[in-house]
Image (cartoon, rainbow, N blue to C red; front, side, top):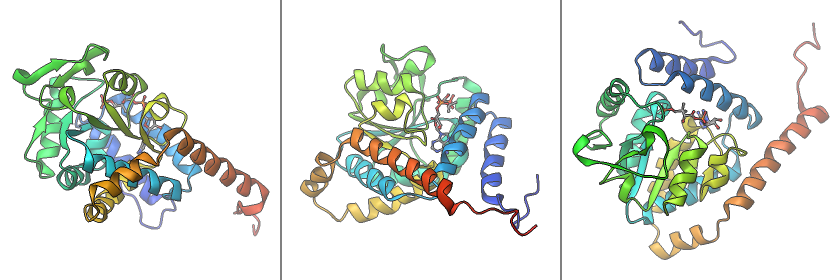
Length: 261
Ligand code: PTJ
């Protein structure tokens, strides 16, 4: 579909096209389209910009990735379609390896996502070689298949755009979890150690920038950032931001595009 540059929602439509194209190429699950639509709705509440609270969440998340013993970034269909190059770069900058772990797992999708990540420049992809498959009992369905060298033995897992069961299961398995989820009320957000309530489209590139800055700091400083962070309070701040934005709009900031008709 041709999207004209002067369309008021051009950027959002281009992102939507990536997801649709990803579904046709078997990268994105059909349910990934529904997940994306839900994300778009929440992004409206943020004004489609990164709020200050999310900068803090991203900073702490990167500090955790840089100080973890064995951090892993879990890749699903939506992430592979929306920001493949950026997720590979974040992996390189933080030393967190990429592992494909899918809710709607099929060999066809594993192959399609592997090829996207390889084209984006990654050398190592976990979760694709059967000889290293292990199962995490706490996880349901096919997501329980994880890589022995990856999620199975990781101390920290970044699960962008995820379903709640998995985050809860990873926490129960004793791992630290970071998520990127536009819904602050999702079980994923509530159960994570650090929830980044922002669009992955903005969050991942900003985390790459953050990693360059934080790499200059010593471990004690990074640990202090992590220790000072409280996910529950941070989600309260997130909800405050969303509700005050709606309040401002309802009290006069919302432009009436029809007023000069
Ligand atoms: O590729 P698979 O098979 O692993 O399947 C992936 C999906 C996304 C289908 C699966 O994990 C799923 O069903 O997820 P949920 O339960 O729909 O949760 C997705 C969450 O991500 C929702 O809370 C959305 O609001 C949020 N979300 C959607 N798009 C974005 C987002 N968060 C950040 N950035 C986005 N672009």
